[in-house]
Image (cartoon, helix red, strand yellow):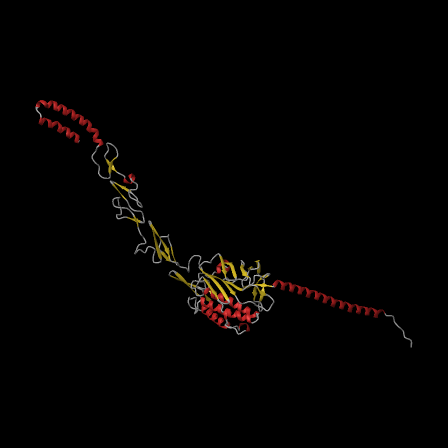
Amino acid sequence: MTVLKYLLLSVTRPAQLIDKRQTVFVMGVNLCFWILGLYLALPLEGIYPPLCQTGYTISKIGSGCSDTDECVEDPSICGNHSTCFNTLGSYHCPCHPGFESRIAYFTSADGGCTDIDECGEDRHTCGEWGTCHNRKGSYWCSCLQGFHQEGDISSMCVDVNECIGAGNKYPCGQNGTCWNLEGSYRCHCPPGFTTYGNNQSRCQELNCDPFATQSTPEQTLPGFDSLLSLLSNNCLVLINSSGLAGATEKTGEALLTVLANVTDVLQLQSNGQGGNSGKVTTLLRTVENSIRLIAPQLKENVSRINTSHTEVEVVVRRDRTPPRGPVRLTNENIQLDTTWETAIGDDTNFPGFAFAILLSYKSLQTLTNSSEQLSSRVVTVSVSNPNTTNLSEPIILTFNHLKSSDANTTCVYWSDDGEGAWSIQGCASVMSNSTHTVCSCTHLSSFALLRGIQENKKCRQLQLVMWAGASVALACVVLSLLMTLWCRFVSKKRNGGSRPEQHFKP
């Protein structure tokens, strides 16, 4: 239309400026230009249409303005972490969950999406007992012990009711009562049962009779009665405190130190008594009972005490599930290898703790008056498993010889039958050389190596043969005498019965 207006004006203006003689000529020329311009203006009208508003374009020649799809023309127009939505003449960009922008529905001119810090101040996203961890576009919660999430990793932390949890029918044992607490629980035991001061252990029956003081000759060693009295009081407090922690006056570590010091004295006195078997039996039995009472009360996972005459190491594990894997305890002269499975025994009776003990006596050199001599230190081995007379897997003990020249050593344990004596039952030598011997035993007790026991066996065998031979010879002599007497008796009887009658004349 603009071109047409120009041509019309160009036709009228020359008529005002020139004379009439030139009018016909000018009008003819203008008419030609007007026709030419009209001819040219018609196609240009479709090529150069009026300008469209923002957000609209001409899709093809001859058509009007149509909406521009900015989301298709530039897929990245909204930036990261957002989605583009086209609208008539425009578009808008909402952010993905976990991100935010200055304007809820923005365009590229307004900015972009930034991460929302769900863990920021004054946001109790994970609850009072959880810790929030922010990450791009999301977050996750970690809970304190005793709490858990009932939904996904972004849900709030809530208390775990250990007393009714699945697979945890008796968290305090069949004889205990479970009290749920916020983030924890506590076990209440009836009289005669204890948790050894650990409120989350199962209630176990505890017998204090082994620690009762008795005025017998075997228990007259210095310090013996005071040790038993101390342990007896400790035991009685444990079984009458309903499982409350901190009820005992002395800690497990203090009791272990007392035991080691008293054991030092008892070793020296035992050796000084000329190897009285009854006193040695009492010593070893009391030490084993004492350390089984003390071990569950220890707070540290590993406890070691090394005195002048006693060396002890105790390893303790506490958990709601039984530990697994190998256990190794070592000291200067002996190494113990076993497993937690052996130390625990039956998993169904797992009380919430397990322990393994290796106690070495440095000065208990001669235990009996026999000719059998120790070739190693004496060691007491104990575990939390109450049934150790026939272990499912044998323990392995590696002894260092007291003298490198020791040979023909035998693995033995101290049997408390009668007054007590060394026995080879249940123990076997796996490997031995001039410096050390490896023993395998299927039960627990106090162990050592003896030298000279093989010779004693041979002597006893020879004595048995001699006694058997003498017995047979004596039996033959007696039988011979009996046969001789019998033959004489029979002979006289026959002679008397066949003698002819004699007539005497007057």
